[in-house]
Length: 112
Length: 117
Image (cartoon, rainbow over the protein chains, first blue to last red):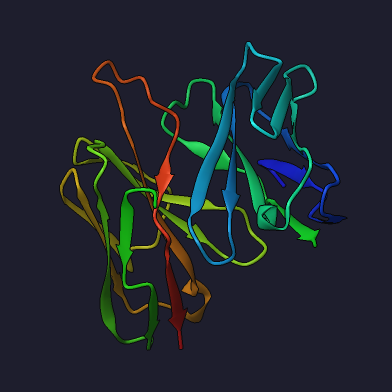
């Protein structure tokens, strides 16, 4: 993709396990965000990490950012069936403050 | 919910029909967005309205016509669409500061699932 990639495209785990999703982008960024989308619904903002930050936590979520590798990861710890959703990274490119560019998403299925 | 509502939630239309999608945000934001989400493709930004003025139009065909009468309402008028326009259309809003800097978090509506026959 000319914009970026997310991997894996799909991830299936058991309840209680950790889930890790990765995102790569191609431009210099101002910040990177993660969103969650339940099937056929709108996106919900989860967490934002700025370009000068390396790691951020929010509840069971942990996000890392490596600007030298132009990559980010989202870790969901102790997953629950209710975490089943699609997860998207999105970034604001430097010098393009008004636009969010989205990755292709990871479909996470947490089995009870 | 997120404070952004969209109607209708589902829409089926023929290629010769004219229809409109409506979005309303109850968050006091001053920027609103239309996105298109097709199967197996990343979210595509279509239009951006900032302080009711259209600031972005990402090469969207003219059969899609946005309208933003005030900072709380956004419409997407549809005319002579093609089957490939079938998708989930998402509206979002955010708060832009007067200095032009952008509060990056966007709040999304539930979307309108559009099917063009």
